[in-house]
Amino acid sequence: MAVEPGAAAPDLARLKRYFEEARDLTQEARAQALIDLDYYDGAQWTAAERAALRLRRQPDIVINRIKPAINGIIGVTERGRGEPRAFPRTPRDEDAAAVATDVLRFIADHNRLHRLKQDCFLDMLTAGSMAALAGVDEQGQVEIVQIRWEEFFADPRARRRDFKDARYMGVAKWMYADDLAAMYPQARAEVEAAVEGGPAGSTLGADISFQDRPQDRASAWCDRRRRRLLVVEIYHRDGGAWRRCVFHGQGVLEDGPSPYQDAAGRPDCPIEAQSDMVEI
Image 1: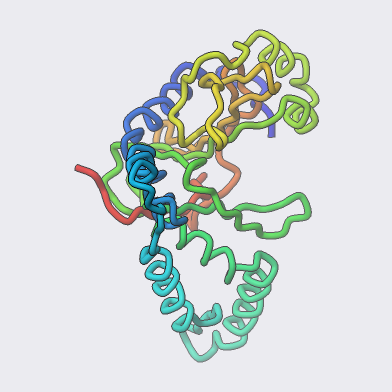
Image 2: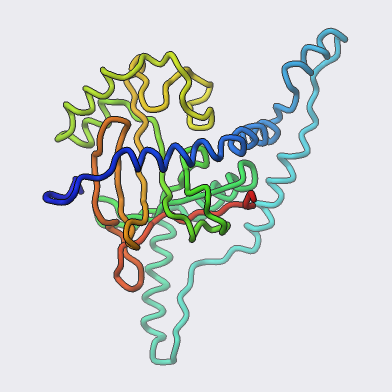
């Protein structure tokens, strides 16, 4: 789906502002999440503490009690898991419920839902939030994809833990210019101009959690040295309806009503997310 012909041009500045405010207003929480991940991985000494230990000729031993505790929580939830199942509302709906159950189990098997839920839950227990996008692939198959916590962003003014009151949610990901041009051949010239005209990666404009790790020196939207662009896929409310837009720092690649619908047939946001807490 490209930009709708005849439709009003999307407000790129407003869409960029959505992402930038989500990035900036959650920067402290994201920095803390990186520390939490280090604790899970066993990197629990600071550089100053390691230097002090070296001066005393003491080893920097870590007895990691965080990782077993989190893995134990995941194990407890796995023991209580069940298979997807649809229940009939009336006795005459039993055959339909059986068909729906088969469909749900096929979708779960196709997407390896068991592993996907584990990965998402680990994100929430370590970094504090998890998200997934339920969509459709080129063959029409239902596809559920994990959104890694560092690539997910949402309206920082949302107060519900499931983000159902968010005005926008999305995914921000670094992509190589040649891969992006292959996905959008009609915008190849625009993509090349954006990556050639961007900075060479001399300033750190983005929050570290949106950077590739180990930390590089990329700008907020473009890394000319590595020929990469920060690409954002955002779902946002506009006049009460959900719209989808894909853009980079210099232009819009796709824009239009969200292709996903709710039970009433209205455009809907396909991202399901959860946070372990809400900062006041």
